[in-house]
Image 1 (cartoon, rainbow, N blue to C red):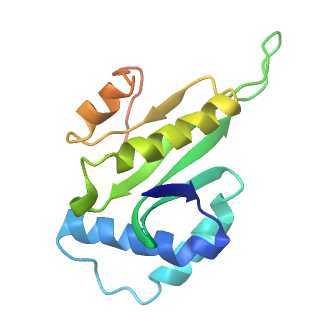
Image 2 (tube, rainbow, N blue to C red):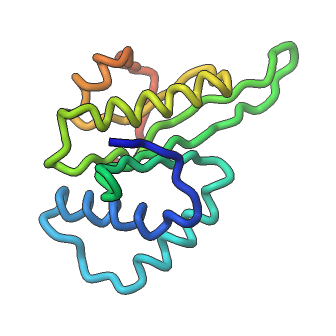
Length: 148
């Protein structure tokens, strides 16, 4: 199993991972002939502020994730800082609990360390809370939500 940064050349693979997640989460992905083009446009708009990763079993993609970088507004007397938001994590069911997610997360957290992020946050599913807890994430009750 390998994990590497995804690039523009990987847009179709990233879109296929997103489709697989949708199919698993909703039973089937709706017929959406414009999805590939919409995903490519989204990627082009986001790639300057997101890092993307893909996990592979040999040459076959089995997982993906991304991390959005937020840059804090400057404040007098405080150094500039950034933080990361891990999102859209997906591992094929047949490869779960085999270290794929841990390897992708470790790679993302290495980038966060390299970029000296002040924090890394995420919105876990109920199933993933123990996984993230094993990797040092703790509950943070400081967020509020207007729409769900």
